[in-house]
Image (cartoon, rainbow, N blue to C red; front, top):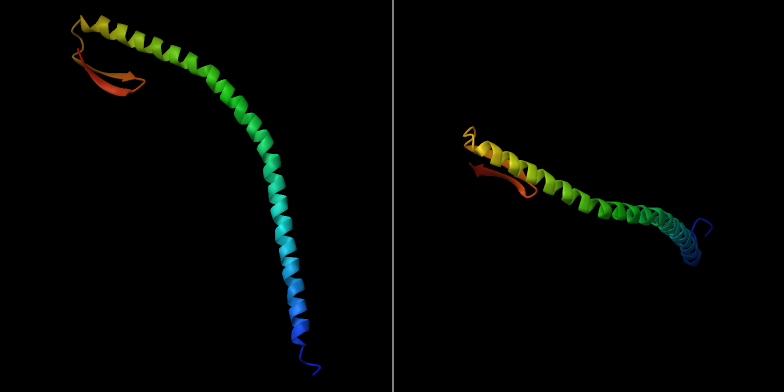
Length: 101
């Protein structure tokens, strides 16, 4: 019976193959976890910094929007008395809309 393997030997061999496969998968999972942890730190820091900058810019943008809206309103008020325009398109922070003059 030299050509045939013992079923126990086959089972032991298959067990070692499975263990090597599990070891490769476990090692790959550990490497991915290490990479994700090292990637998370700088990203978290950068996102925090970006959030601070956006929070600081928000009031300035609101102020500029208010000033632009004021200028548009003054312009509309100024030209409405001349009779030059009957209907104009007004852009506001909420979107576009028609204004009857």
